[in-house]
Image: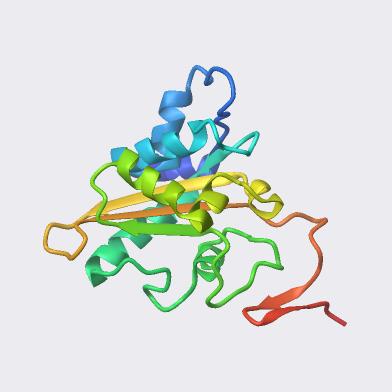
Length: 195
């Protein structure tokens, strides 16, 4: 466990391209960087390799994988599939963990990065459910320009026998801030340019 954490800090993300043949070490990258549980890794593979995936590159990121695992466990402990378990939105959750989202992603209750589900027993089953939802599909497959530029992925899974949904799934797909991002202050009610 300590080795994985140290490795995560030294190499925060790994490139896995969904076009063409995976790199020789792609199998290891799926496990270490995409998700902490084998079922999370399976869902990450389905998302990256889906033939409808619009992103040219989607890299697994250890901060997002840890955040997703923690959020899935938190949902199981509360017995709810909810973007606001813990009292903050997904964007704010990632910022609090040190993942620097663009400044125009709304804060506090905003969600530009997270998909959650519960009660699906396999990665294939939850992936089909996500693709059946237009909002989730648009985000996870990068079907709009806003989502297509998100290039980092982390997936979480948690199973809890004595809970309403048994299985809890979380997917984060996001991108980090860049120097050329518009300088705006964005809250949940809209964005304003600073003076």
